[in-house]
Image (cartoon, one colour):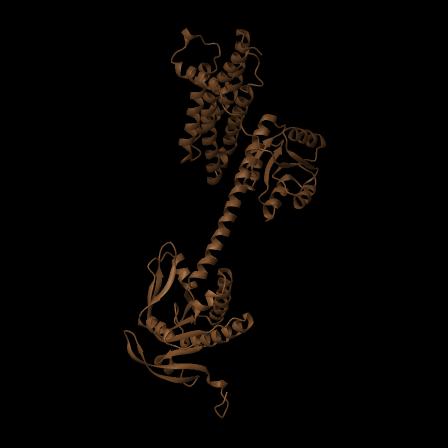
Length: 538
C-alpha cells in the first residue's frame, strides 16, 4: 500500500469512527432509558404495555447491532469514489430508519393510550426515549454524509479536527520504544483440535512455553501437577465447561492465583459478566484477532509479574517484621513490646514490690588476661547464656549485662507475689551453674551476688536503640550489696530476709557500711530450708 493509499485508509477509518461516535451516543442513551422503563413496568405489573415496551427495546438493540455492522471499517466497501459513497450513505439511512420508526411509533402509541394505563413515573422516561429517537432521525442525513464538500459544510470544523486528531492517533509515534512482550507458561484448553493447534502455534511463535488440554478435567489435572502463568480457557466444552473449570480454580487455594482468559464464540453480555465475576482476567471472542490476543496476553502476564513481585516483597517484609519482633522480644519484655506496638511512646511505671539481683564475676581482669579475646567472649557467652536460661525458666526479666556483670529483676513489668523467692532461686541456680562451668572448663570461676527488694521505677529509654531499665534506691542497694559481698555468696538485705524467712537459710552478716546509705543489716542466703535434715544438718 502506498503512502497515499495509507492516508486515504486512515481518513476512511477516522470518518467512520466519527460517525460511529455521533450515532452511538444517542443510541446508548435510548437503550439505557428503555431498559429502565421495561424494568419499572415489570415491577409495577403494567402487563398491558409490556409487549410494546419489549418491541421498543428490541428495535433499539437492532439499531445498535446495525451500527456495529454497517460502520465496521473491515466490512465497509472502498468509499473513495462518489458512486460508492452514495451507495453506503443510502444503505445507512435506509437501514437505520427502520428501527428508529419502530421506536418512535410504539412510544407514541403507548403515550396516546395512557388514558387506559396509569404510567406514573414511566411517562418522563418514555418521553425521553421518543425525544432521543426523533433527534437521531433528524440528524441522520447530516451525520451520514461522507461526500460533503467544504463549501457545503456548516459548523463542521470541530468534526474535521476530531477526525484529524484521530488519524494522528493511528500513526506510529516517532522514536517510541517497542512495547515489551511478556513471555510465560501458558495452558491452552479447547476441545476443538484445530483451535488448540492454531493457538499453540501462534503462542509458541511468540516465544511462550505452551501446553494444551482437550477438556476441562484434563486441564485441572495439568494445573494441579505443573505451574502455569496463564490459561486460555474455552467456554463451551462437553465434559466440563470453561465456567465450571474457572470456578474450581478460584475455589482451590493452590490454584486461585492462576490467571485465566476466557475464549468463546458466545458474545452474550451475561456470559462475559459471569466469567469476569468468577475471576477471569479477560474475555475474548472467537475467532481471536492475533494482534488483540497478543496484547491481552502480554498485559495479563505483566500484571502477574507485578503481582508476583508484590507477593515476594510482602513475604520479605513479613520475614523482616518477624525478625524484628524476635529481636525486640529479646531486648524488651513481651508486655512492653505490645505497648510499643499499640503506639505507646512514653513507657514508665512505678512498681512497689520488685526484687533486684546483681551478679558479678570475681577477679574478671585476672581471668581475662589469661585468655585470648575470642576465648574470653566465648567463655562469657557460655556463662551468660546459662543465666539467660535460668531467668527464662523462672519467668524473671533479664535487664542487661554490663561487662562481666549481670542484672535481673522479678516483679516487673507485671507484679508477681513470689518475686523475692524467684530471685532467690535464680541466685542459687547461678552458683550451681558457675561451679559446673568452672569444673568443665578447667578455669576457676567465682561470682558475687547481691539482692534487694523494694519500690522501683521501670521504663523504656531511647528511640533508636531501645532498652528497658530500672531506677531507684532499690537498684542502687542491690548493686552495692553485690560489690560488698563475698565470692560465691548471695548477699541480701534485711527486707529480703524478712520476706523469705522460714523458706531459706540465712546467715547474719552484721552491719555493713554502704556508701550514701549508712549502716545496713545484711545476710547471706545459703540454701532452701527444706534441704536441711531434722537435726539441722545438710
